[in-house]
Length: 374
Image 1 (cartoon, rainbow, N blue to C red):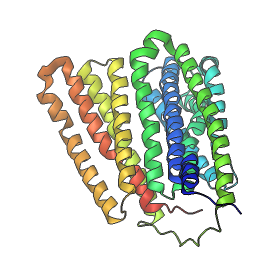
Image 2 (image 1 turned 135 degrees about the vertical axis):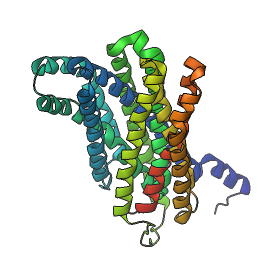
Image 3 (image 1 turned 135 degrees about the horizontal axis):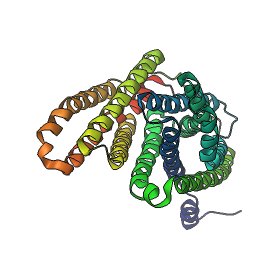
């Protein structure tokens, strides 16, 4: 007969980490992976936009076609990723590794592909150019758009909180994209050019793919250990949401329309205020993305607390503040025109503050209208 002393029990408890500590560490790993996943995605977007503009010209038609192709690809990717995330037997972290690998493989040859295809359709009718542009970017942007719902699905299986998962992952991914935007403006494009920037992006894709495989292996081992020690799962109550899913979809669609409209409005205003400098374009996009990231983090924190009417009121306050900032943006720049080049800093602050309020909308809507079910 053997007995266990208190000291041995304490040693054993200290040797095996608590489940919540392991969970937090796993979430931190996912956040690091998704931060660096946003970095190459933004590099590709800026490089491919430049390449396509160089081929088809820079006018309102080409800008509209390129932006529409990017948004459509990301949207279809989100739909595909959501469909995949519902497959319980699918290893979502391995899917992330596959997506990053395929994206990097396309990115490595993307500029040469664009140049060859652009030479074939140069001078063609606008509808043909639009179809070719869509065909060029829809596959890689679809892959990039699928990453968020895949990781959200993976995290929700463990946390049971949709809004907090969406907010946390959207925060780190958008923050990575904003950091990449500023890095492109200051370092990558001036020092490495477009081809060198693509190589950097491919390197990030490879690193994220390797990290996702490592995280999958570690998580599988921990899941097996927990399943061996756990008893039968408790009976789950039927999940409930505060808003119908159709209402959440309509609000998300309207929010995307308004948010992108603000983005285009800011680009135009800041370009006029700064003399149409490429640096102003990159920094404005960076401020907008970092603002969205910051707001998404606020939304994740709000979703971790009491929901329902509290989240709705939080969104209402945020959107009211954003509307006031948007209303005062141009008059403020006009009254501070005497600052000359320093007006760029004032404008970037306004862009950041408005985007910060819009960033909390997506996680709050997800929490209100999406049940954390199977």
